[in-house]
Image (cartoon, one colour):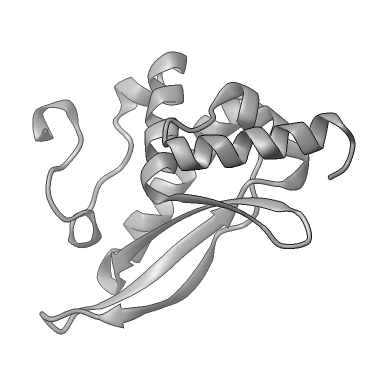
Length: 142
């Protein structure tokens, strides 16, 4: 898929950013974000509902990983969805000896309803959880 600006194969070992043509179009941005969250996002409840995004990158590509995360945050902000600072988590040592690290951020609590109404999930399990979150938010429980 390199001709459209998205690499194929293992994204952990390749530098890439969100293609400009996706960032420039609101509907393409929405679909890109929804797919990204279907693949690399998580939704769970601790004391409150949380939505998180995370990717792993080789240590040598952490700068590119941060740039990619900033692309996602830029697109989220176009929908009025705001996020936390990005943090790094310990990764692992791959079979090829390269070290990876995780890059994560969460949707801010005040943006959960906006995420639900503007982006959402296609993944059945995550979509069901998000509908639960939306119900809690509408009832003022969260």
